[in-house]
Picture 1 (spheres, rainbow, N blue to C red):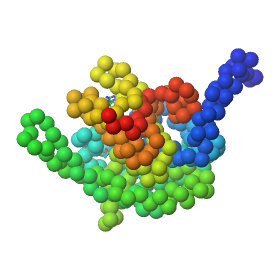
Picture 2: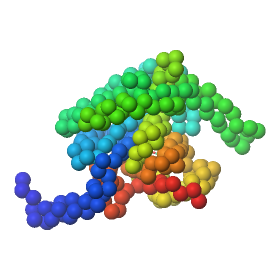
Picture 3: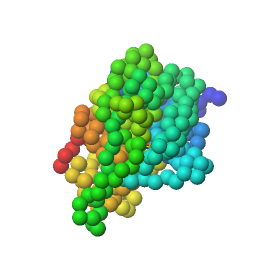
Picture 4: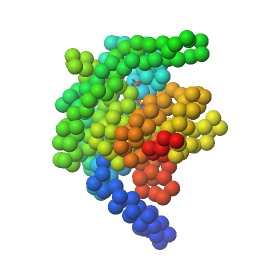
Length: 300
Ligand SMILES: Nc1ncnc2c1ncn2[C@@H]1O[C@H](COP(=O)(O)OP(=O)(O)O)[C@@H](O)[C@H]1O
Ligand SMILES: CC(=O)N[C@@H](CCC(=O)OP(=O)(O)O)C(=O)O
């Protein structure tokens, strides 16, 4: 159907507004974390895949790291295995680890790869085991509470943190115009599997690649205060205060931590944006308004 004159003018205006951003981002790496909670329906997943194809086509280098927490939860539920979290991290027994690896490395990873390829892109799916992309070590979690004299160390099983990234694998793929799609499973020195929070993987990948941006797509409009107002441009100190008073909790904890670590390590900016809004990545990258919560390297 031909565009009406108004609609065509609007398209031209949007494209023109995007020009300075295109000039700024072409040739740069953007790490996009696609949270499991933002994979709500097929239309939304498809628009995400189209956005990645479009970025690649215009000369930006997208690297996708995906989650899949709710999808893991669904299968655990069907298997009558309870889901438990400490500080936003899933308590992962050996049995749970098998399910995590099946869901993230299998179902979710291949779904995203397939959608990108169906939309004309060239995606390759990897877990951290492929090419030993993500070396991991056990994550030690501490929990503090007013009732405890000192912070308690809690063993949450096969949960890891990234110790090293084999960037050679990513360079090889991106140099050949592939879009890497990474499932957050790490491999230990002894070959053991580790379940790693996807936000933490995305942050570390952005750090080692010195990405221009780290974009975290989630199921909420951004980081919010207690009244539900989206907060942006916060300093490290303000974030620390929001954690201490309980405004930031659960799944937002690893998100905000990895965003801060990434910008302190040289990533220009990190963004927590609403993945339930179609094309939110493009809105963030190419419009004057931007969306969600912006985090830059501001300490005070
Ligand atoms: N201050 C906050 N602002 C916004 N969301 C918050 C905040 N503190 C905790 N949250 C929670 O964090 C969730 C996002 O984390 P998570 O569910 O792990 O998402 P994802 O699957 O995208 O990683 C939000 O849906 C919300 O419930
Ligand atoms: C250790 C840990 O919590 N790992 C996560 C990995 C998936 C993930 O991070 O998914 P989302 O981004 O969709 O939350 C988990 O098991 O749920």
